[in-house]
Image 1 (cartoon, protein in one colour):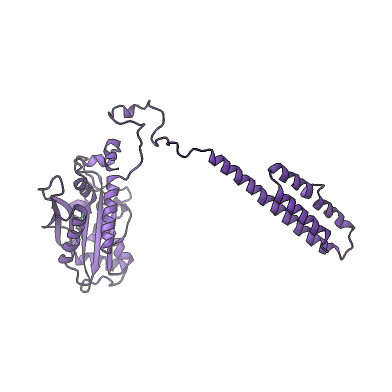
Image 2: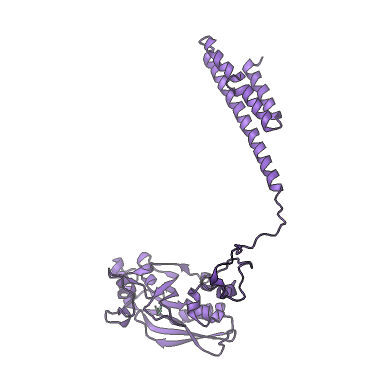
Length: 360
Ligand code: DAH
């Protein structure tokens, strides 16, 4: 024979299960768990039980109370979700949505100058042309086995100049060219700083690209900006030569600008490479198809750079007798201007939707 408490539990569970609405469920809850409900009454009766019966009945009573409480909660949850789905069914999902740019407010005069642009047309977001170039470039370098590296925009002179074999009297270090902070640090004038940071933190072989911003005290005009963007590249391994550098950059340029792209390397001078080369491209696919355009600096890593890194590391990990490397710095703004035929660098920072929408 089941204990009367078990019978009570079975009744209660059946009643909860068959409750068809919230009122019926609430009635069942009051009947069993309410202050004068059956389960509570049993609790009262505990006092009258014999000493040895108390723990057994007490335990059973707890189980019954828990089972009934759980059943009521789960039935209540069922009612709630039924209600929600009824509510959702009332929403007509075939109704066209409100365009995301629409605010119903047309009083902002900033747009009235912009003939032909209406806030009521759909204004879905898209990536900035520089972001697009960056992503395309990273994807190409990834396929060539380059990993991503980065470093801070605020740098010290050692990472920006000394370690890159740039002597104190070099004009780039001049306050006319470089933004210095009051504490002597500076805004990096190129991303080549990341070459040093990468080699400090890991031994060779190294194959990284480091995209990021760089800063120079240039007057803002169509082709110069105090903030611009570069992709630095560094490859260090045994027997790396100019041929590897040329192969990698030619591959990159053809992937980016099309197979009909010609690449030219012209001798140049950078303190941190020897030999140093400037990289030019010409592509029939481009508007300025007949013109050589400079897009990067590059070269074979100067042994003095390896020595500076070794000194900072306190080892001989970058032994110039054993390791060699190439490096390059691509002008990203320049690449974007060429690829998208953008005449003026300032457009990148003006947030003009007429411009940005052309790259959506
Ligand atoms: N850092 C140079 C600049 O901003 C570009 C450059 C030249 C980077 C040669 C390199 C390199 O890595 O090897 O003008």
